[in-house]
Amino acid sequence: GKWVLANSGISVLKVEQSSGKVQRSMTPSGPTNGGVVGSDGQFLYLAQTVDGTGGAVIVVELASFKEVAKVHLDDISPWAIQVRPRAAYAHR
Image 1 (tube, one colour):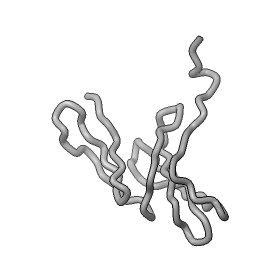
Image 2: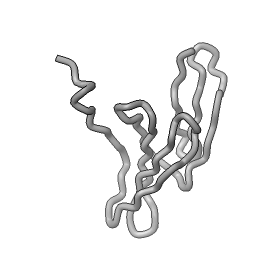
Image 3: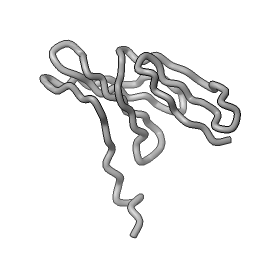
Image 4: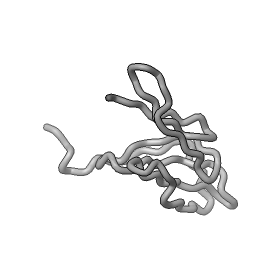
């Protein structure tokens, strides 16, 4: 069935759209603000405002629903995040 992702800031939930039932949940390695699914549909990218001396981008693999990477950003604190579509997915 169809599902949606919900970012509470502390955890990320995969929720079945029709019933509202939580299918999966995970807690990233720090609080997050925004999130976006990559154009290939395989990864969720989360914006983390505070990570030491800057912020970070946390990468979650959707198949396993686990954090697979965290990229620290010196002196940058992202409040939102966006993924540029790949050319193969662009429509005219």
